[in-house]
Amino acid sequence: MKLVTFTRSGKQSYGFVDNDTITDIGQTLGSTHPDLKSLIGDDYPKLISSSADTAPRVALSDVQLLPPITNPDKIICVGLNYESHRKETGRPEVEFPTLFTRFANSQIGDGEAMWRPAESTSFDYEGELAVVIGSGGWKIPEDKALEHVAGYSCYNDGSVRDWQRHTSQFTPGKNFRHTGPFGPWLVTTDEIPDPSTLTLTTRLNGEVMQHATTDLLIFTIPVLINYISRFTRLEPGDVIVSGTPGGVGFKRDPQVFMKPGDVVEVEISKIGILKNPIEAESID
Image 1 (spheres, rainbow, N blue to C red):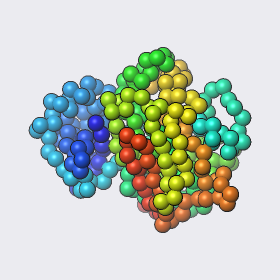
Image 2 (image 1 turned 45 degrees about the horizontal axis):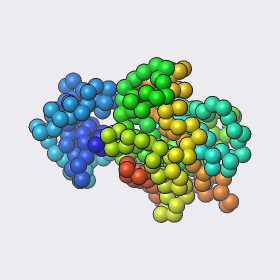
Image 3 (image 1 turned 180 degrees about the vertical axis):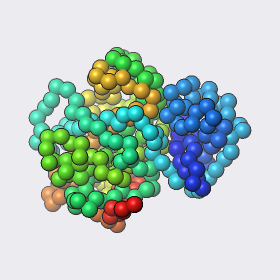
């Protein structure tokens, strides 16, 4: 099932996608489950089944998609989690995952413009698989980890490289406004029982820049869930952005950075395509 959050006529709701139609279950469940985060933290298959027949239908083309989870409690990103990316950056092998945080207000949905900030022209793409937690937990065992996942999505961890490299801490370069596309939807685990079987491709203006399979992750999804949940309790709607493969722009020769007028796509098999244009930062 493909779950989406969207706005239509200025009103936010959520639902599931079937071909080119959204069943707007937010209209029927909104009084008890105001957003998708609250829905996936409950028995959502049963809730969706009980409400789908009476929910209104809207055309996918008539809505603006938002990040599937607009208000996660935590967005935890993983750095250097493909060997190809670790090698191109010259970083040493590590025993534990490299983690940093992204803030929810840096995220945008499919089709929205990524903003190249006024502070920099070193604006890079990072196609990644996003993991959305459905059932919260603390100290989750690896062999139970996937039972805590609601589903998967595409993510573009847009990176302002010079700000990222001001110090050893990545956070400033990862949190400029409108730099974190997430979507287009959340594909539930009944359609993706094994996240290590996916293929990820990032394209810039139609040219393939990154291409890898998720079985190449250094720290697998169960390992990440176990490790992260040992220092913080994971909650429904939390997002783990699992890392990007080699081919990033700042390690190319010559370097390739995103600029206004470009279009970037992150495609993951069994999920879909996250597509965003690039614009100069807008002050609002």
